[in-house]
Image (cartoon, rainbow, N blue to C red; front, side):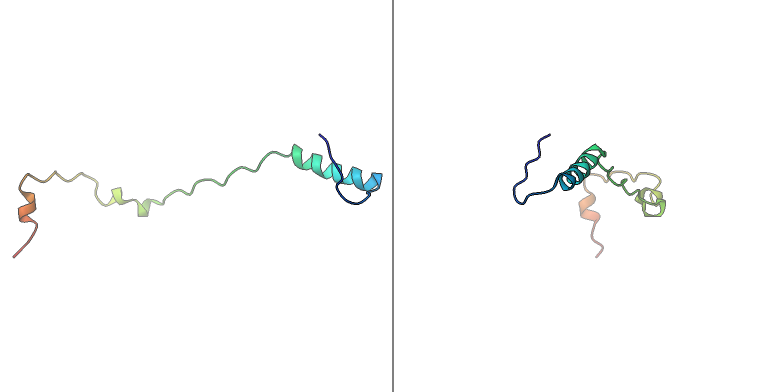
Length: 67
């Protein structure tokens, strides 16, 4: 690892402190992403319709309007 000082004239102690911070930061693992939120059972639509409805027949569209 190479560190280059762009501006200023740091003392050896300041440079050592900055290098210690950079090395400590590089040694820590990346934080884990937060867990995915799980849906509650009450919001699950499958709890309302436990069985599947039958498929409509070929002329079902004619019976979709009540006069």
